[in-house]
Length: 133
Image 1 (cartoon, rainbow, N blue to C red):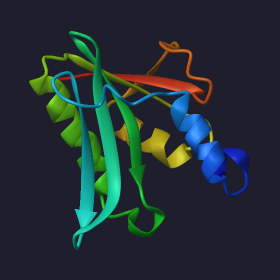
Image 2: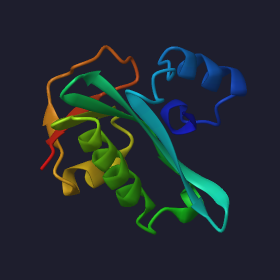
Image 3: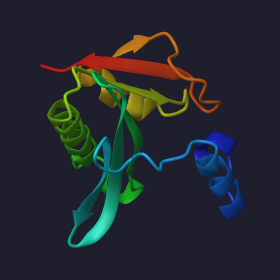
Image 4: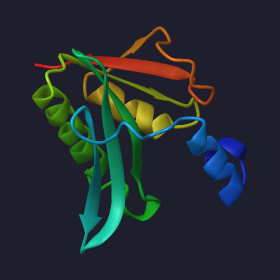
């Protein structure tokens, strides 16, 4: 969020942004939320929810700056894709902002292709999809 604003975000701004994109459906039976830990400390996360029976959406993917470059983003993405497949999805979708260049590079390197917008997320500038094997 701070990167989007070009300054540190206040807790109120973070709460407002999170409230505009609810995550109540990132739980079973049609979703999940995963945490990545290093030495027992949470350092990353990813959420997943079914949009329709054959399409899952990846949400809330984040890796703390101090552990970026260790492959955790790729691991979280793979875990979300595996979970989507287990839920019966044949495709995964996600959206991201223009300033998250590293995230867009990660998605492209893992087979995601840019598609037309599938949501009205006000913070999204790019939408991606991947067909699952």
